[in-house]
Length: 195
Image (tube, rainbow, N blue to C red):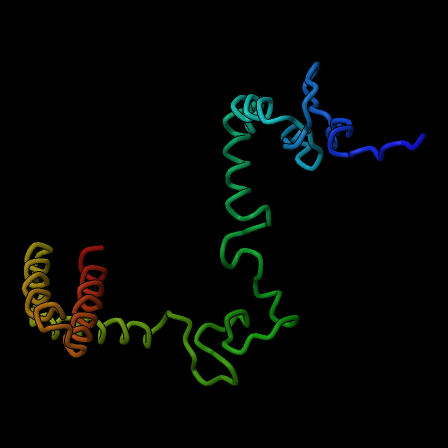
């Protein structure tokens, strides 16, 4: 008597899930991972679809933390868990010999840049004259003489913007450049007189 070949389609046993659901009493497969806790983000529970939904809806990363701890955690996350410090706080003049300082920022001699060329660091008479010349140029753009009020400055700004806006000139590049100059002059005058 000859035996018939067994058809694997009809006789295959149901496959067991690759990993079982970690929820107690669940027989389904654990296809979805979930962190065990806030402190163990690299260790996981494996849940079925129904139980991962329940787990996600109840998950609170900040559970058990005080307001101060939550704030510290958020601040730490804003810099991608890397150390940060205020500008200039970490490197002082003592760092000068160990690092290149071509502009003379850390050499302890304000106003002296590389090779003593009289480079300024934003302070002193050169900085004051640059600020005065920028202010004078801005006043020339606005065709104003001090003293003036913030309201008068803003009114003049609106007139100039309407007059030189690129949309009023069919997208002309020259008008766009003039508008950039007007915006810069407005920012300079606001900072100089009303800050």
